[in-house]
Image (cartoon, rainbow, N blue to C red; front, side, top):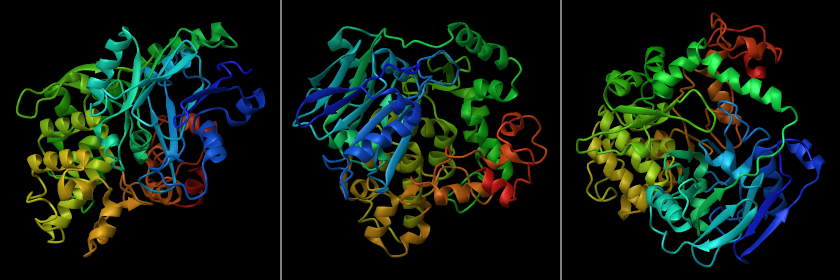
Amino acid sequence: MPYGYHGKILIADLTARQLVIDEPDAAFYRTYMGGANFGMHYILKHLPRGADPLGPENVLTIMLSVITGVPFSGQSRMTANAKSPLTGAIGDSQAGGFFPAELKNSGFDGLVFLGKAERPVYLWIKDGAPELRDASELWGLGAWDTETRIREELGDDKIEVTCCGQAGENLARMAAIINMRNRAFGRTGLGAVMGSKNLKAIAVRGSQRPAVADAKMVKSVASLGATELKTNRGMEELRDLGTAATVMAQEFAGGLPTRNYTSGTFEDAEAISGERLAETILVDRNTCYACVVRCKREVETDDKYQVKRELGGPEYETLATFGSYCAVKDLNAVAKANALCNDYGLDTISAGATIAWAMECFEDGILPLDDTDGLTLRFGDADAMLQALEALAFRRGNLGALLAEGSARAAAKIGRGSEDRLITVKGSEAPAHMPQVKRSMGLIYAVNPFGADHQSSEHDTSYEENSGDRSLGWLAELGLTKPVPATDLGAEKSSSH
């Protein structure tokens, strides 16, 4: 068995309430290596042609990497895959936190979920011993209460929990899977797949660390993080401001999507910037397993948009989608939207972008008050944005039922020119990186199998003239040694992406 793995994949047939441990051979591990490759192996093996993404025949996988659980900064990651309820194609999403390492230590390299449970259940794994437990009392709870109740029931506050919130239970097509109350498998609606299977949560605890080939070298590499942080300006900024540092950089470049992508600049960008967040509502910086950067924000607000620090602070994408996309300049309201998404289990990108699309449709007379349940859904109205978000999460009323389908399906339903206001690719809402400024993003959005995604390729700014040593060093190791202007989309850049 290759180092870094246990050689065990847990297959949970929820319909039959059967738990089977698959033990692939070394060739499987060396061929697929981990993550989405593992997931696709099992999805292609078990998923029937034409399967309904919200039906019991869909297959949900959560898989780890060979170095998940090894104490390297930035490497506590896991990948979820299933047929996406949002796009109808493959769904793919990644999450961090402490859950990935704890899942590895529980004795498994990944999880596969088949079928649908007759009533709500959660999967509990401790040191290689899995069991399905009743989750009826957890149904209807958000991520905060779900995690709290499971830890209380099992009597261990070190248990790591990942779950779907009310949005997943209500089959909102952009529902996310949440762990640590604020780490999300955000994109492509995989929380709705969990909800459709009556799978409320997964709880893990373990002490079974897999063997490594060179423990001395692992220790040496692990210590590099603390050393490099002191000299790496990019990581230092990420520690101080988080991904929110990107707001003003995008604004200056003309690439901060505003009013549903009708502009690349937001007159109130400074009010939702990482700098403003750090000066006002930031109370602490959190981290993932063994990572020294501490880029995760913890925020607290004490006005009408009250936010608890445990529900996390907004990332760049969230500041954009609930901020500039919706022309909302109230940072506390954006932080509240982020907290609600984390508790209800929603992708902040698709949720915020869908609401921004609805705002444009409302202002253009395409979405009448009958469709919004009387809500005046105008750009810049923070209260209206939050009311629309609540409706979406619970599929409440006409507006909630419409928005929970995602903007592409909603546009197909109402017509009247609403399709012309979409910013979707393959049904997935575009993240806050405009192809008008980052040219290769347009290419990546177009060819990526799960639609518009900003994590599927390096960004143009990493491979442009005058970019210094920010990333050219490691790109050169891949044979990329001729950086081009940022706006170039010739063979050198497109082939490298």
